[in-house]
Length: 195
Image (cartoon, rainbow, N blue to C red; front, side, top):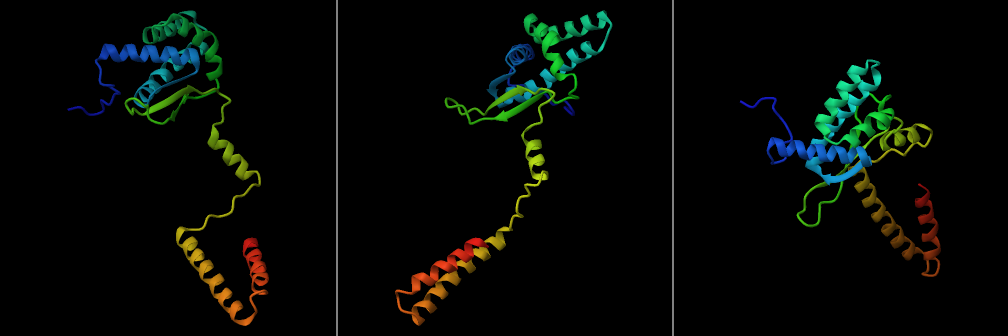
């Protein structure tokens, strides 16, 4: 039985999958963001986060043997010395204060040639708040949004609004001459717009 064995298999053998992950993670570490298929991005996320965690553990320890051990573990996964050196020397400083979740995936429109689902995967810095947190701050800062009406209330209000001007216009036509009717209709519309 295959319980608890979920992996992103990507339709390739183990060696090929390891090579793909090494290549994608090296590109991600070098460029901070890459565009790839959604399946590759979802498979790359845990892989890259484990490598970044290794770099964080190496930065946190004072023992040079442990630092070397974590560097070699990362090098065994990423297989690119320059990318690993760049991560352990420079990039790890951005992630020291972040407890996890070092990557973000944005979905894109499907690729034109084969209609494959595309995505951007990027590294997140420690001071990045994300777009949702900025919205919640603006809402709590005093820019309270008006309460949304339910769909039933909206449709009932629209029907009533359509019927009311038609009845008022008929009464106005019957009671007053045609020259005065448009003058009375305009204040009613202005009153409705204020509400």
